[in-house]
Image (cartoon, rainbow, N blue to C red; front, side, top):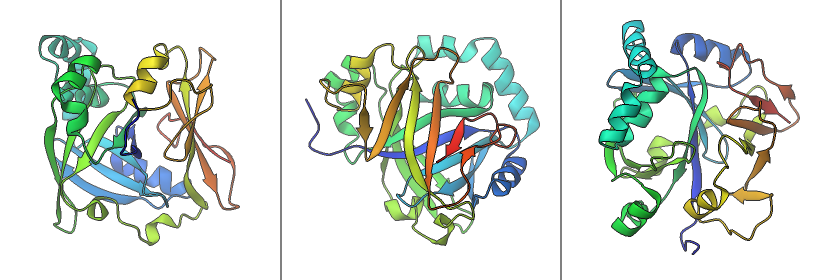
Length: 259
């Protein structure tokens, strides 16, 4: 059953080991990068796009924290804890303990309870909603709810508590020197992400009768059958600027292309 309230793509998560270096690298690639703020042991920076979708660069605040997260991840501790007591936190811990790169994506819902209600939660094994907050560099405190399925190949969900425009403002930082305007295509690895295609479509409330060409919130979702392809890649639409594959040395291994 399709939702009466359309879902929207909110943001994509690129995990980096050194936030300052990542800010410098993405600035070199022609993006305006804005520092986001601090949330416990992590901090982030944001690349805002014109359609109010953004790219989040996220890292631990200290090298020691990174070593701890990395060690626990390699020992399988987070996966074991998720098995014992499924929580959204273990998903995020795996970001910080795993490899750099494009690691996740988030869908915005105006009714996150629709996904977290008991029938839906049991059907798709979705977590209860959790409260999160972050303080911006200007002191403004942002609040939101997050929820997500245990299947980490599916995106997690966000619903704003404070005004959406405080978290994703429309400002001059959307005018990037490389002329990038928005994400036009998400490329998902068929073997790594879309093994259970009907589950993916049902979760995102997409029409299961649709062919291989899918779309969500005006963004095309393309399926790659190349087994060596990354779990996820992004294509950006630009207004006549540079084009081509961006250097993975500068993108922390993320597969990003400007078309």
